Length: 219
Ligand code: E4P
Image (cartoon, rainbow, N blue to C red):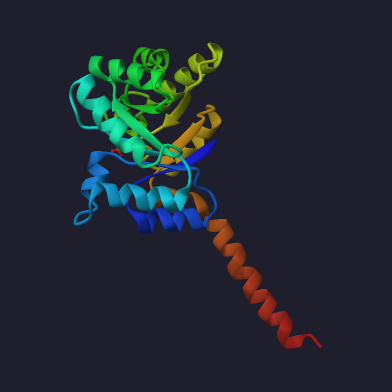
């Protein structure tokens, strides 16, 4: 499973990138809004230069024409790495289909059903992002959607990857891996929790203590 980091914060991306586990980045308007004082272009270009992998940038237009116009502008900034995030809706599907014709990769976002994901893949989305945490929040099984979408996409051999998104805790990350999500996009605070285990911490402390005792008596 590839790991993307779900943030527009360069410091957080740097921290995860140093671990050697980051394959890409997803941003959205809410995440961009946390990075006040910088231009959107500067934020995105800094991320792309650091990560050198797919970086999803979301359009805000409501019509296919507005979306594709924004998409072309973003894509031109770095055709190798920029992916256009398009919300699931009628105009979004039209935009994905048009951008697919132009070989501009899209990440169809705000996916909450298999049918939405299937339509996005058929329209030519390179990535489809089911939102696990937001489904769990309303009493649905978000990870079941990821599992069903992976089955559907793999069964029909779409050239599309499923990104388990809206990941809230380490259990989500583990479940995404076990159901075969192609990618999980994970916030830094969850990645940091994935590293930790109380027995690992205790093991390191015990080894350190025992080594110090050994050094006192060794020749
Ligand atoms: C995905 O690409 C989105 O940016 C993100 O995962 C949304 O997560 P949230 O539900 O925690 O806002």
